[in-house]
Image 1 (tube, rainbow, N blue to C red):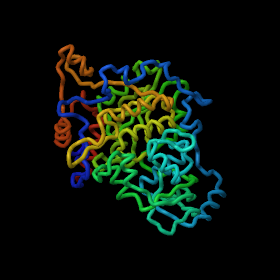
Image 2: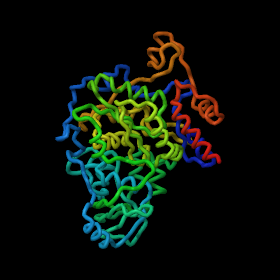
Image 3: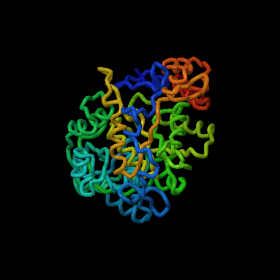
Image 4: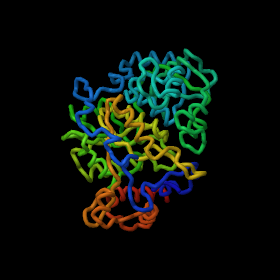
Length: 443
């Protein structure tokens, strides 16, 4: 089964792996339902129990204590680095995302692509050697170029741009099966992350210092961590909502209710921070997602909701990706992280089974949140009722309310057929954008 939107925009594309719809057939949208009945067993419930350390501006300290900035600002130094390059390589879209996040400090404390010893340590232990800091997934540059040697300098190009220079400190042939088993918990090629490292990445991995020159030019602008931090209020809880699909009413209920969670202080803001880089084949294109977010931002005009876009390529690595997202969002100034049920999960197209347990990502995030100096935010499954609008599933049952349902399949049919989509289910601005892009894709 395709995602709730994928078939609208790429109807002829063969899929390797299937992804679950945003909705279950019952019409219930799952948000943050922990495995335990008592949520206090899974989440911290005191706003003062895990205070976060701040930098001089009053924002949470970046991972490792300092926000990295790898940009070379002196033009003469840039030219000197370019002239010293022995090789050039065109970056893939994933490479470009990684170069950008390294350059702007999204991957702080990294100052370049991981060398072999760092890569091995992260694969084996999910930690950086020496500092022992958590790090969810390896960050490496790949190539098929046999002539690149340790000591080489590579000019990193992307669609006519010079993104920067990589000083190659290490080059090796990775054990990709081991990487897959440790990072994705499977070596099955139907897993999108495994497929990526096996088929998209080159034969060799390269590590070394990166010198950044410019940001990739994209339709969707991606603010740097420093820019996002400057736009966030100081000494305030910042709850981040990570997504890779259009935001509908239930999602809005999720992140607005999160601002009133027991472990979130009064006056908090929510940063909606979607990933707009490459993801699994079945997700809708980043440009479509970007347009839905921009339309929704104009429609809701909520001052407590901040928006920014993240140039990150999804790995669908479940628990490990939850840690990676928390680290990145900490670097962007976030103190609290909403971890969805089966976050960054994927499903086997052969067996229909999930690659991860439903609550694996939540449990991993909650386990490591204190070490990261962050908190996770609890929420519940919500449904829309005729009498009281959105309420929790438990409340609907307790009060005997009438739940309104709309399956993902029915939503797609209504979208294609031009039928009116209920306002309780989706924002009209988002529906309009989805219809416009669907028509363009079908033309």
